[in-house]
Length: 290
DNA sequence: GGGCAGGTCTAAG
DNA sequence: CTTAGACCTGCC
Image (cartoon, rainbow, N blue to C red):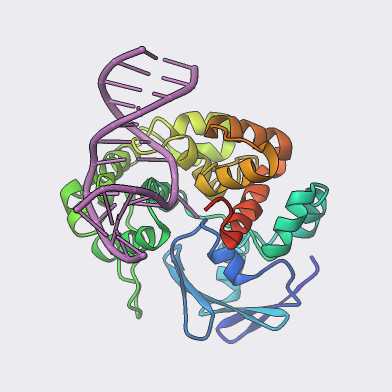
């Protein structure tokens, strides 16, 4: 580990932290509960806690936390055990990825909570980031628990969401036609008919088959959940942006998403998920194909 | 006002 | 097994 960890009051400071750019990490479409503050730091609610993250020169400052939470929660959540220099070195053998990495050099893939990730990406279907974020905040506010001493709310449990009315989700939380899918999926999880934690021990393809039995979870959403919550780094979610960037730089012709998914998985192998994040950020920054 | 956005589901071919 | 159409919503 090339950086140093320092505890200072309610802060944890990662000294000389490389491969960690908050904008790249929190605005690359993998997480929806990070908000940009006036001081250009980012705040999130996860694992029932509120965390603020700020880059200060060469350091990353995590505020409103302590060493215990850092070790038990944030170290894994922020994927701090992973060697991104090595990943970038490997992926840079590909000339296009080498360019993409220049844009999103500070990207990391977060390890998020399974149920929240599941519901969040059901909401993401045929949707836009600002609206996805708003719906998730509204769901937390109406169905989650207030976090003591703050104005923030945790994301609700499967049990709570399984008792929600699809109509309320639609009218109050603005999720539209995804309301039924959210309730039905929550019921399946709450009943224990599908044990999400089991997926940690499955291969990507086995996990994908299991997730796709849930209402609202198709090929793209399942890959996102596998990558962002279950550490399946070989998952290669193909959304419209990845489709555009792959067609533009690699395939040179219109190609259906299923084929692009196979192509990416084969080309990038066990690092496909990281490649996808760099390419996604690159495509959006450049507005490729728009 | 019609079109479209970080897909999925359904009903057909 | 591949492929159109519909689908909530909010902003252009």
